[in-house]
Image (tube, rainbow, N blue to C red; front, side, top):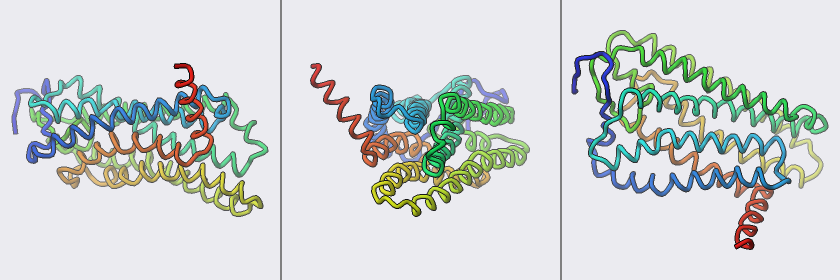
Length: 312
């Protein structure tokens, strides 16, 4: 491992898949195709939610925020991944590493909280329909979204700041495609058990608590759907909720397997494939999940496309 004279190096060398260089070109091509798809899909969701009056409801307000979050999430790591996979010089400055990790962690923490907020919105809409407009007014929506972003920033600031306080003893090689907390903790020297414990505890709070709220919300929602007399109402409620549940599964499943184990026990390639999953798969699939399983979004998207071609 390369050593420099300082505890905190001026730059990091991202090893990526140096031990398997044959993977780099296919992954580079995959990112080059899926990154624009993820951006376009989420931009389309934001546009139709803003332009179509039928989608001016709390559910689509939160969906717009999710799409914006996904765009920021993928943008915080994919350009760096492309640089790492497509270049022989796999170097990132210490400052750029700090900024990228703050940004990436903020997006991840905020998305976890936003998914819980969206499940609460569905709970109110289905279980308290007569009070929905009153409870989920514009002020409440803005307050909830503000808390989501502030929660993500607080998580990022606390965890990333503590992580970068760890001595690296001059080690400047990161066995990853990007800067990420478990890998930095694993690279650090000296006593780091307290940091591993702190990361696990905070991740439990940020992942397990929102997930419990989501599961509790959907337990009540499921009971309410079963009591509905209208088959059309049950079908519509199930359609909107199933889309959200699929997104929840895509987000929380890999996150639990990654962040709830000590960084020292994480395998060498696990963080890389996890970053690829969150940088590519989730942001690309989310727009398709919400579009293909939602008549309102499909109709609004069709109207937008027809309007573009008619104007031309």
